[in-house]
Image: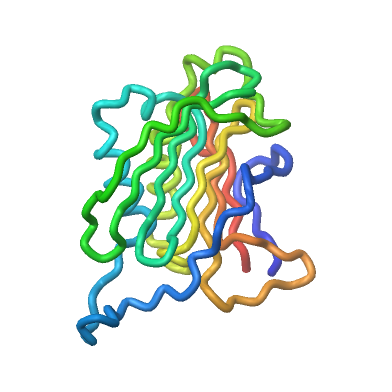
Length: 200
């Protein structure tokens, strides 16, 4: 799939980690045999964010990952502690993919960061990962060609957030293979869209 770049070019981005795949996003509840609407990754993120209202670190710059594991969404907030990001503060919320109920909220404390994940100077004044997501989500309003139950990531690299929405299950990629349906780049300082990539 070729990439259609909208906006200005800033360079390539990279993911925090290899996320577990969402697998089959069948919306049928096997226990009841009737069709039920499954939450989207975006809805799970919003529920996870609300569940962390008593944790101020949810509103710091950093990363967010949303992954569907069996019947549960894992919503992870990696909040920055220092500019070099050798350590991040991890908060994780488990959200039932059918009911939307929160089964667990965990403060996992400081976890080891990964190489090449440092932020830009003055990171304390960056918009939060959640704010960057909100900007990106508005930017793709009306776009439906992505896996709504697939992995969703908000990744801060230097002074740019990369918000990535997954390909639909079974979609094929071309010679310039994209591993996402669309990706939005948001300026971490100004909270504005810099660029949007769309797989086509």
